[in-house]
Amino acid sequence: DSGVTQTPKHLITATGQRVTLRCSPRSGDLSVYWYQQSLDQGLQFLIHYYNGEERAKGNILERFSAQQFPDLHSELNLSSLELGDSALYFCASSADSRFPYEQYFGPGTRLTVT
Amino acid sequence: GENVEQHPSTLSVQEGDSAVIKCTYSDSASNYFPWYKQELGKRPQLIIDIRSNVGEKKDQRIAVTLNKTAKHFSLHITETQPEDSAVYFCAASSTLRELIFGQGTELSVKP
Image 1: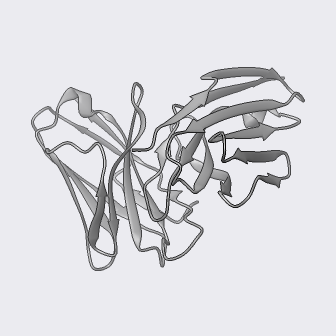
Image 2: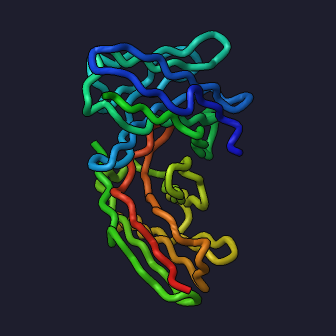
């Protein structure tokens, strides 16, 4: 167990809908990273938050957004869902206050868009 | 931006043999190189990492080497066991940055 939690574990929804994925980092970790894993794209970085502020954006669609709250949990919002959004969504947390920068992954949310 | 290439994409070995997975990176600013093991449907688990000021690191049956000049790093697993079967990902990052992953290597250890 990495100490990172994600809910829900599974999500099945229809095209055009909106969903929210939740992540709670390890105690003390200030950074939350979101990654998408699909069969054809591998593990792709989406977005990084550090202590409530957006730090970096990767291959994140405009239909997707995220935020990190004062208690450091983070939510990833996916809207106008398409079949191609079906994937495993992982968050990872890191202390990021000093070297080393180990990132520990949560169990993931499997999103199926039908 | 950073780009990480990983080879081979699949690797099959006999139990007890060694396995080697290689990665190359493009950004000379990268200074942290972790390796993750992922079993089917599970989270990536950090198994070993190396920093740019170190050339080699070992932890029991696994070791990682880094060649900064050539911008490549490798994972070595000795005395492989069936429970080593999984997908292995290399990654690279620089200070306080996201991980850029390789494409993954599916390792199969045959008993």
